[in-house]
Image (tube, rainbow, N blue to C red; front, top):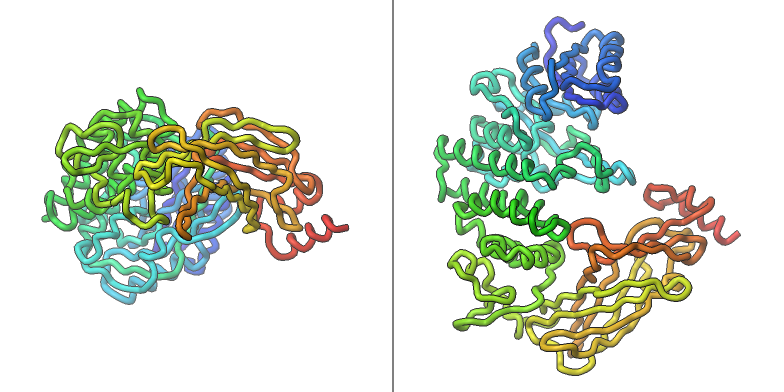
Length: 547
């Protein structure tokens, strides 16, 4: 074993015996060899201790630390391993992820380029279901540079990962910088502190961390995303934000400062947004508890941070402030898609989201839609809300839909309105026409039948999900919006074209759009598999379909 390793890589693990060898192998095979690897086991109950011992027996650079009791988080195993680390540089790795082969070499070389306290590089994200790859927040890693203090680039607060960075051990020890124990979202506080305390840090463009993520993880998977339904999870998020505020204030960035405004905006636009996107799928009791945790905190955030939010985001906050929880759940369905309210209220020359005038000045600011000019803005930007009232299987491979369109700006005539629904698997559009008839003030309704056997598919078949959209037209301009499904209708499956099964369901997260899922069966289905349909696979599947 190297007597003086240059870098300690701390690999934290809990009940992950299957993936731990892959993570450790990615460290063992680094191009920089002067390493020690500390496996920090958070008191696993599966075969992890045995696997860790076997790995250590094969490579004398590996040491194993086992916590006496499970801490329930990432902080304690990292902190305990830091106390044992012998190298002058330290890096962190989670057992379900990997380091690219040159990660350590690249980050160490960046330390040689400038006198900095830590270096950081890009993160490659890999979907576990499809293998598709992308970059995490790529705009932060578009150029090499040295940053002299967080005030130079306060938006880095949006990049809170601790795992894509190589720290000087002396920097961490000098500031007693450790992860907060007993709380989730520990990276956010640790990284905010590191950014603030560092004299300088260097950013490189190359990927130095490979993050595997499951966008549709099983409900029992132990991920923070799957714990968002726990109010304790919300409480941790708010507590971490409060600690960041206190730390920034103690280091020259109190409430009202530009840096604090950036942090407040980050909380509203990212942290709060994650939970707000779940609100349509939570019951009113949960939303009530959620509001009790977050509203007192957001009340103290910088007004300028709210001003930077989109109108739907602000509306959700305003409705939570007002205790109008059902309306908040309804508004949250439009967060990612610009879906308007069902109705608006006018008072004192102002137009407000929803069916009542807000009671407080803060909520009036949040819910004020006057500047959006709902009645006079260009038609393509007009706000509509298309809700599906009913979804039922029809004859053969059809689905019957009843659609209600809310028109809060009064843009549609009190007369039948032609509309079209588009469905585009693999970029091949199928269109169904319908008529929307007046059904009350600012409301139109219509029915349509989707023939799913007639939807155009590629010759090589299609595996995946698509969401129909509804298009309105007026004076040569088009307005396209999503179709919001009933959140609890019973999904059903019909036979589709070319030996496909087609399932009609509600999107299980976010807006809850109507969702159509295609699953090819037989040999074509096995060829397409769960991965992207490219190259030789497409050609083979096409040949099979055409004999």
